[in-house]
Length: 390
Image (cartoon, rainbow, N blue to C red; front, side):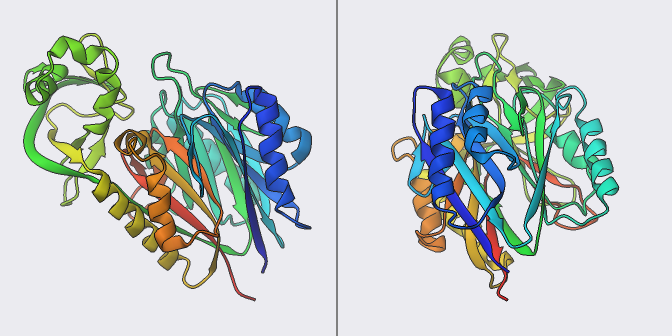
């Protein structure tokens, strides 16, 4: 069975023109094959509807799904001001997209609605792609509410943390606070690998007060004071740029029952009252450890994740790689932008098209049917789409 993919990238001051040019570059590489699905990563500074308008002017009735990001990723590296369009198609590849505007207010109900839609179709899907709001909504609750037998892959859109602005789009519909999803069908393989480059350094905290997505106190004092003691900056400075956002690279690892792995949870920012704003709830009384990352370990993890993904397609020919890296990776590797792509290519090769972007969370399938799907922070996720030999 034939599987074909192409990635186009374009930089333009006009959002519509950027979407149009990126779609044009991708279409030119598809040859005689019609795309079944377009996946778009767009700078959050560009207006979503204009980017979609430009892409649709060329893609016509092809289903579209996408998300905002501080920088898109291709095999050439990271692109902070470019629109990236990935196309995938081939023999008997089919896709349909759905838009859920109420995701941020009703994350569990969104999962239920997705399950219902799949039940109505009564046709198996190969992959469910999902891009949700990374600043609002409860991705952990969404993952726990979706049946473990649904093969999901997704990420949380990133945007302007100061103004809580990010967006997602499906078809002609777009906005913040929603979820865009795509059902992808066909005879192809998808291999997923993931990991993070952060390790505990021994500093232990107890979450003594939390509410929803906010960690108010660690060890009985404002969360920012704990970090101020460790890193030497006065606690009041952690509530202002750049420290209130750089805290992303200093996540917390939480102990989990019946597991030696720490659950990584990363602050979106530090609030004026010294609390940590997370995008997943944290329970009072939880034990946490400070995690520290390193560029070299991140790059090693990128190679290991790529190996995992390639092994999972079991000999199929890699045709496209989708890469969703946490925004912490962008911060960690700022001295060498896009270095994770070079590490991926050490294993994948330089010819396979790559598309993706930096995100505020990642969604990967359940390890087995007795577990829930996983909502991750701080990870790099790579999904390799493979063509099955005839």
